[in-house]
Amino acid sequence: MDAAIFLDRDNTLIHNDGDLGDPDAVVLIQGAASAVASLRGLGYRIVVVSNQGGVARGKFEESDVDAVNRRINDLIHSMTGANIDRFYYCPYHPEGTVEKYRREHPWRKPQPGMILQASKDMKLDLARSWTIGDALRDIQAGAAAGTRTILLTAGHSAERPAEDPPADDTADSLIEAVRLIAQQRSREAVAAEPTTRQRQTLKPPAAPPPPDVPSARTPPPPANRPELSPNHATAQPTAELSPPPADTLVQEPPEPTDPPETAEVTESDSESKQDTPNLKRTPPHRGDATETLLRQILQEMRDQRELDEEFSYTTVMAIILQMLAAVFLLAAFYFGWDNQDLFIRWMGGAILIQMATIAMLLFGR
Picture: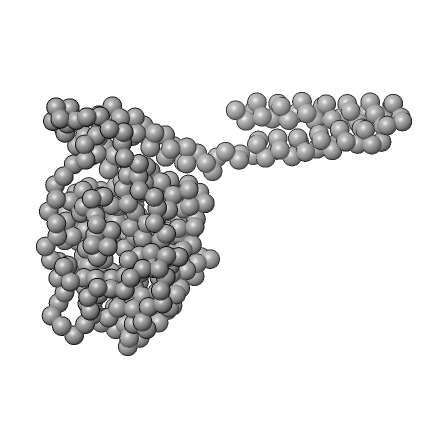
């Protein structure tokens, strides 16, 4: 079974202090894209779970949530080549103004419904998974589902209440959270290595699973039956494209899937606090291979952090000068074809500008 990283969306992946239904307003938090790529490099599936009460308050439609989620995945993919496996969200809120969505739902965080549903859909090992978010409800949902948790504290230290249950760790940013997860994996690999060496026939490390097409998921309204347990929570697999019934979800994937197996669907932002698989299994890894992988991940994060600095002022000026040198060179042949004096003047100018370009690049280093 695969392990996963369950990420909150707003103020964890993107900047959003209110209800966001406009994909053109999506702004990734610095380092979020490289963090997602690094986590995928460590072999984790990436699942976004978020409350979207703005639908219940009439601020936007479910189709707008889908559009925002697609935009997030497109931005991350364009920057790093990585993809988010699936999006789960809950449009319900007990104080909503839209009658259809005005109710509590087992997917609405702090309940663990979305995480439990994702675990069922994707066959995930929750004991080896992590939940990362900037709010107490994210930590509560992750802990109730049986995952380890990291609370992002940037910008919230003054108003942060005492966590109950407490997070397993805290981090200033998503990049810092990736570092903590990589360190924990390294410690677990080292602890498991003596036993592994006794019975291990060396196998190449398994490649991370190919990214699923991300899809925005929403739960249908809860059935008028006793509260669902995780075993009853059923939803359409994330990569489905078949049109859902009116009360179900709007999907973002280009792959059709089968309809839910049971009448009760628990795909909202709250997850039921029922028993979850208590799997305490650590994947066998060789210590040296893990250390090498961690160094590659950390180097990737440093490279991404310096991405914005690559096109510095000197680099831009050097590009402009190089283009100008090319213009002078062409002019030398065009105007000086039958005039040696003009040819020498234009060619001299091209040489001087080329030298200035080289000097600018050396200065930039």
